[in-house]
Image 1 (cartoon, helix red, strand yellow):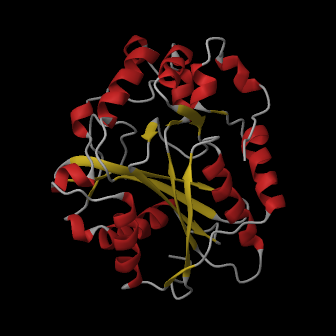
Image 2: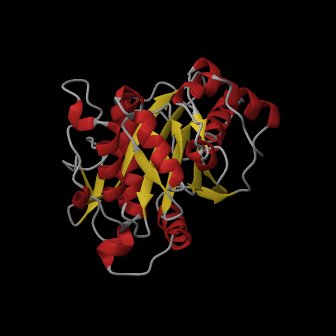
Amino acid sequence: MSFSVNRSFLWMDSGTYQESPLEPLARDEALTAEMQQENAAPIIHLWVYDKALYLGRRDAKLPRLEQALHHFGQKGFGCVLRSSGGACVPLDAGVLNLACLLPDTSISIDAFFQFVTQLLSVGLRDFGEVQFGEVVGSYCAGEYDFSLCGKKIGGMAQRRTRFGSILQLCINVEEQPRGEWMEEFYSLAGLSDMEKNKPIPSIDGSTVGSIADLTGSSVTVAEVKERLYAAIQSHWPVQHVPFAVNDHTLTMSRAHLADRLGLFAFTAKELGHPGWKLSAALEPIRFDN
């Protein structure tokens, strides 16, 4: 790896979001933009979104995406087209999101993935042995899925910015029918009608699980945060600090994601409105603070 883990990671928790689903991603972007500062430290940023579909760019090709998103809006889901790789991932209050942010743009994609697999192996060891590798049939399936007892509990994706590297991942902690949600989403969105350029080959909801269900415990997101911190601290330097980012940098990061990268985001209320159309994604994204 081309960065030193002797420098303490800053452990930042920005809480739970329910407004624009793009907000936590904008905060990751802003934190990474500030890594241009001299002696910038690596950061572990934790957050929760309740609740939304985090779409991959491949999902934009689904023939009935508008109908599927409108339906899920009526069920209380927002949506966002995210900037990192992969396909659709459902988030809710029982899913912990974690971003590892490095002031380094030269680290290889594989090296960054491998480092974070080490973090997860240590951080989740209290719940059993975490396996890494594609869980066929799961949503957003890929080489860096991670699983317990053969069922997917999360996945990872990364991207580079001008001043740093971001690896984002989600961990299914508390039980929800996420696999079934994704079966329904892709059915409504017309996945089976596509002959090529499919976001995913197929979806089998039974391939997805959660830490709580697979360990038979009532573990919560708050508990997993505590155990992650304690376990990671035993191997790498890390310190709790309040979440903080410059307001101007955050505003610029929102604009960068929405305007330059062409991302769109809608709340559940917007998606569920009778007159909502996906074409509205071409309009400026509104942020409610």
